[in-house]
Image 1 (cartoon, one colour):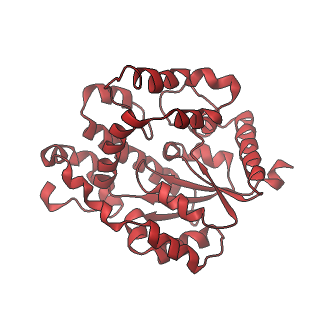
Image 2 (cartoon, rainbow, N blue to C red):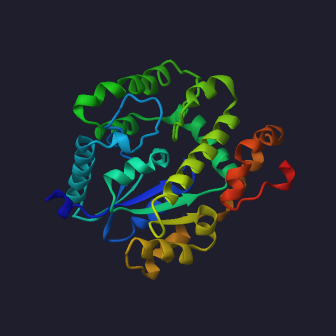
Length: 295
């Protein structure tokens, strides 16, 4: 009965700071779609204590699949029986797991220039350290099963006591956690870790999504979305079998700021040159060029 009622969700795959929020907002304009903002604890139901975000098919047991699909169905019915459009950046490291849970889902994949992602992420890592609020923490915990709340108690205390009350200056990491990230944070500077986060996560997603087969995934670049919203959105909406009208385009033009792509220029160019080998291959795979200033 659940399988008959649960509508195939739209799963947006994308790295941290790659344009997933904007894309989700645009899809949320459609009357048949309800967006769900990063229900991280639901996706981690299989192993909430895992220190990285890489999950595979073996983690999707019958119990895990039943639980996640049940939560999606509940959310769907609570929001007018509309189709769910979900984006959780950590899913970039667990495409096979997500696909086993939702084999009938429609997949979108958005990429963004590594340098722009890194510049935006570096600001986010610093900002969230200073501005994380009680409401944000409560929201992130609200989706967690009661039996697993103790796994997240440490993060809660870290965010709201150590950092807020004691004014800790330690770095607060956001975005997907690849295997070995904690060790890299101890041994390397923030830019190298951000470079590895971008490259390793994008490579994993590119390879995993390709295995789903032709026609299963609609891939687009964030840069193309902000430069030519009509053609990119039309293709994405058609892939998800959603009708499309000019009202989305008008809203998109108001929401998009094409001038945000040059923020990487504020970063130290010497440091960037040192980490170019970390990102070069994946930059080329997605059609991005290394700027002349960094060669």
